[in-house]
Image 1: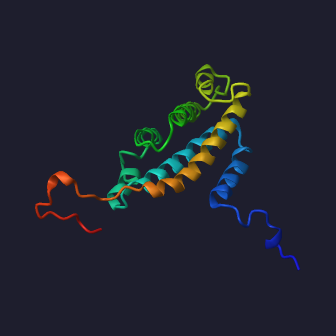
Image 2: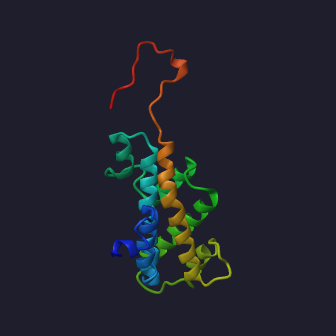
Image 3: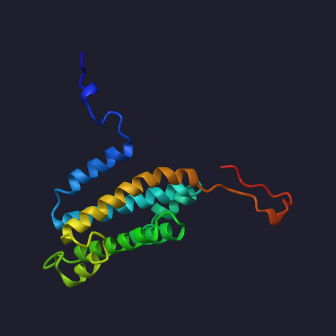
Length: 179
């Protein structure tokens, strides 16, 4: 006897695949403006999670990302930090920077902006898939970044920083705080 769960092709899918599918289902239906704003938002969220997974697990680490005026509270600062720490690759950095700039152009202009606007086109030209139309280039780049970064978020947990005693200190009776 077959049950509904037996016929569900997604029942054994990894959570990253389910999350990517849910995002892309919504993303592809968006207008150009909605798509770039949504892409910026979700990529920012994944970068924040990736950084949090990498940092020492302390309240101070969380404050870096989400406190009022947090040093890593912006999309731009998270991109820079993730790149500087080796959490994203150089090509990913170039792509997400272009997406961030396009997001800002769309977010700060309410009229007369599209993928053919010169400033937007200049950023689109930094994305791969040169043989495709601008929206398709954005779609494919965002899908690739999301897929890679959702998996990377899991892998980064294995690289989480931890407190350490530095060998040059020689101990001198100092102990690390217990958290």
